[in-house]
Image (tube, rainbow, N blue to C red; front, side, top):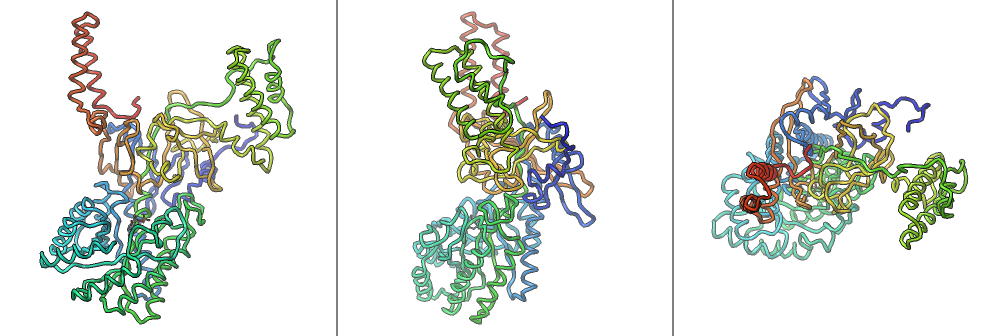
Length: 637
Ligand SMILES: *Cc1c(COP(=O)(O)O)cnc(C)c1O
């Protein structure tokens, strides 16, 4: 439906339409052929690789879409930039402590991700944060020399023993006391094993932060000590002669904090706690400010919940400056600064790549040039509304069209009109709605009652993936991830669509997107072409999605492929992890694939006995059944 006068479409037009330069943070772009590229900086210059080429490489290696692609260079770059941002902030401010980053394991526990983080983080002694026994065990296995190991969460005797032994092995393992009940167990176990622990205290700061996670801080937060409990902790440690073990103050302000001033406020309060613990006689040395460094999913650099109004450099400068200032005022030596950035570290490096299987359009299928002789009044009105010339009151026209359509539906239900008449009415309604939309698009201001019209007429593109498995935060907390086609950006995307997944669930869809000017209810897409794949990517989804995903409709884990981009613009496949097979997901819900097969074989054999099928037919069926059990849970072509 491109107007003949429309100028040719360029990748630059797509870049601004999809906002890729904003949310892409320099990692994603479009090339001249109109493909989305991943960009990596090397000393000799930049390498940009088309995601379409990576997809072909993955398919040639036998993995069908959907695939979770991880680009390890991006994880590497994020770790470097975080550490370097603090290093420069510290140098600039003349701050006298160092920066010690740790990665909170809960944000992405996947083995290959943790391995990459400890590998790339080694040069900065980047550490790990564990919130449970399972996380501590994997952290102990993964962490190299020198990185901090911070233990948060509720700690039982086994958890504490493991951490104490780790310390004896040479790890700097901090037990962060989250609740008063933990201290007696820690003191008892350290006495029993003869190991003096490194203790941290987690406090609740009262400074409020904006964003979706406001509840993680503040008086009613379920984590951390109140001020009175902190004082009691200090007193107990003094009585036990163990105040020298208290060396870290922990304070997690929240996640995805959009506003830099909130971070400054939280750090200011945390520093006041820190300084007074030093004055109480604790040696201290580490100030851990938790997570919170936001990812700009919108690319808008605003204090919107899915954005942030600061850069990584603003963040590190704010923390270093505020800490230096408050502690200097009280003449307290500068501590090492710890942050537990999870989201910002891993979000960029993972993306979900999937194909579109089909599209449903909301437009008339067949419009007669002339109305048949006897039509109900409402059908005649719909016809007039559709062929009305420009102008008119669009809100009034649209509500009349709705009324006519609904009356015809009532007449149909009452048996007064036929199936074909109802079909004519539905077609005319869609034609009328589309012509109202076309007239609306020529206007500057959209009346409020027509704001949803475009989205309500948007196509539905069926994507080969499950929101519940791959993007659970979309439903859980209304997270908006950047989504866009991976190719054809030399063509104008002249359709609008929402994306529905393979689950038969009305929440299994993406219907909030990022555009050049904030959120939009539908996504510009290209029309599908027969016999040609149409590929999409969901970006910035490396944080929190993997282990929160569930098996809704028994769609399992997707394949995971990790690649490294090379300086010459090629790429190496570093790791391939096959997704769940149908047999795998059935066994998660306690079926045994072997006995399912046996049951089916018995049924087939009984059918042979009754003469319903032949033995060769039985064999063909059994082969099909067993190859299905081994197959991918997603749509296979
Ligand atoms: C979740 C969590 C983090 C990670 O926060 P991000 O905002 O993802 O960086 C860090 N520390 C603690 C204690 C957490 O619970």
